[in-house]
Length: 583
Image (tube, rainbow, N blue to C red; front, side):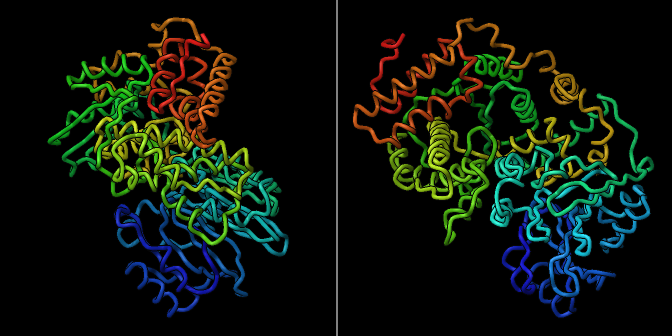
């Protein structure tokens, strides 16, 4: 989200409070004049507080965003001075008045306990024009904004990566991995900010940077009183199990038709184990059979849980006419692609300037996810859907280098093909896939390390768990912690190995990197020789090299698995290619 400094009226269309926001979030509106505050608050929410002027800066506006709460500050000349970023998680009775001066006073007093007591995860980012310094004040939990950039002596902060990318003069100061993580997963799992030099800010510190992001001075303060004693592995597992269970019940309580993707991995098997406690009228468990080791483990898990497992062949051709109202959850691997991102990029008057090519994949996939529901309604077969996608997809990507654009399209069509394959299976419900990302981000190590940043994924927000992120030994979080969670939520699955360990039962002959490249080149030559378009050829290659499997999986596949994949993909796309010719 980007704030514009031309009056509160500009905010009312972009700061609307999400209807699904948890009740413990507050919508606060601030302004330099009471009339401005009233106009702003009436447009957004009845809950607002006026704090008036600070000593050197006036608070202009505060709004709840999908990622945090941002307070933007203007100096008395009306120029951008900085922002305060935080998440309000403990709105105790009578304490809604959470002011910036409390955060700054607590930091100045080097009082970490006071910061924790006064209501949230805060980071103050201020710009000192006299010395041209950036001042970052982290609380005891070490929260920080996702994206920060400096240009022409001014500091810019935003939760909107594209807006910030357009502000940046070039990619040299950017952290493209952080952008990519945010756009792909909805939160920044890299624990880095955009601007270099501030990604290692210590918790409970005051750090001063120059406008280029280089650390000039760092002062730590005592937070011993603000830290909770570390939890042991079993205690942490118990806390996680409790939140996972609450989250599951919250998101499935009104669903009457659930479809679960069971790969056999820890996340999916835990999700399916929780499904036994749900009283939905219809529950289906599906395994997309593109990796034999996953299918074998998925069947073992299904047998333990006593549920029927449907193994879906990727080569099916009959599509369901069901199209979800919200295509946000169309990606079959469980991770959502942001539909709003695609709309922003492809519908604005001028192309958004990208930071290298790291945003390309998310943009194109989001665009395809946006048009896929209409394609599913208009066609009956996977081939017909493919034609519609190719006809309607925007393939002119002037903001990207040609090679990057082609690679992005290839990945996008591969992802769309997997989505079509999932619909072939009759998988009509996407409820479980929405739930899957919430559970996955909750119980993975990346999430535990970034609880403050990933908080919006949780319908049940646990401040104590967030406070523990600095004291829990994350090096110990792994398979053993999963086993403890299973011991509490699904004891009949405790002794099962991970599905990756099942690969030892496969034949040992692997497809070499050189052999894979040779086969893909041969298929490309064949497709072009048959008069197929370059985009169609790219789509087929994406299916083979990028859509069904990542390169990491390809290089560890057995020869038999690779042959099966070639046969499925070529047959599905009408390519009469005989793999045995290259054997």
